[in-house]
Image (cartoon, rainbow over all chains, first blue to last red; front, side, top):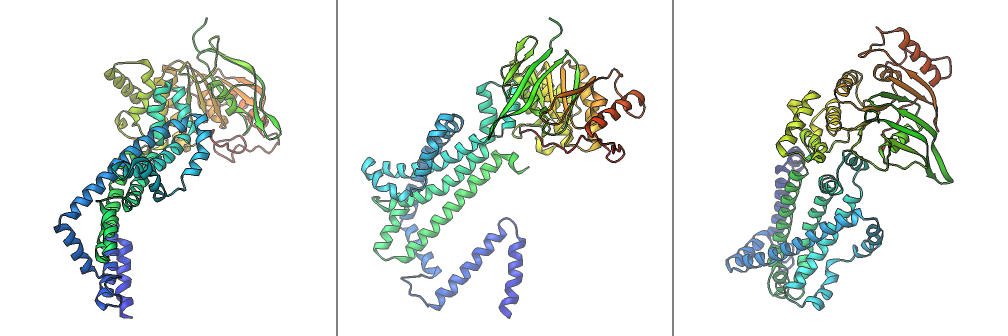
Length: 264
Length: 274
């Protein structure tokens, strides 16, 4: 009964608090649960380490200097792959969304390519680019590209006819119709694609680093597995989750600023 | 050649592809709009009014017949034929000023002059104070005023309006009608105005065409010489007689009771064009 009484106001608080309050509270709850589980020592540390062990493992990696280095390498790879994939995806999507022949050709192709997971590309990437940076950039770039392309294509294809008619009746040239009407009209879709692309960049980053890397967060995960350092695995997973969420938040923020008209 | 804006619709037919072959959207129709005239077109839903407007605007190609503006055939959309849509069709990524500037771009003006002219156009419709606002920050009536300013800024010779005020409340609509007449008086353009509202047609137009139910033909034509601004209650007489006649033609049953609805609308309201 006492538990119920303390929980219900907490839950109400969770509902009430918009913005950061809610998530912070949710994390606090999960953390408390985790800590209780760890303190009770129901599960061996090697399987499910307690929060303080994970914290210690994280500090250990940080103080040893590997964490910062791995983080830098991984972020660099994600950023490079993302930059390539996103720019190519936007460019191609703008083209294929407007050109009927390409639209007809690429629709089925996209259907076939989309279900292929990033990790399935790793063998091909290694054959093509070796185990150096090239193959990582390729895997990340490709997954980002596909999503950004698809979303851009879709956004451009479904630009409301009224906008195009208004633009043409106002004497807009093809060039201006494209730059001042089609691109902004498709911008919400493009930004949604970029946001998905950021998430996918992190997913495929780990896939790319799990095989044939000698640094990076994915490599460090693999290494931790070999030494059965579950505490390190947890620390790295939490870090990956945190960076991914942060990146998503940043891209979402920037996106909302750019397509300010979407939220009325 | 006479003054610009002479629009001749010569025997055009509009067909749509249906599941069982072509469907007639507009049977052979001929219409001449004199330069600077203001013509209203009233008709029930699905009578082909929007198809006719779309053909004149160059958005669809008639199956037969020609549309000529000052002698030259209309082959596609151009800045010579302006449009005002029921749902404004403003670009939400541009401010009110940006929307008007979009129409001015084709003149290739220096930046400062373009801005000055856009400002003047907004001031003309009473929106001088709102130039930095985005369409979604404006009310429906204000949005339509931006659209009017934008369309006239492009200096079209022909202006097509597809139920432009149908989405507005009665009071706003009245104000918009007056504004429309004022702006039109200052810029000369040949106007074709599609509406459901018989009163609106009688207040604005100098010629009213009536279309029958779809596929619609032009079944009646009224010339209104009354000076504007008009009022149905004060000018009474002739306009009211025409109004009765139009309503009787639109609703053939003798049950036409004008007091029932304030706007006097021809049959069911039509959805906006795509």
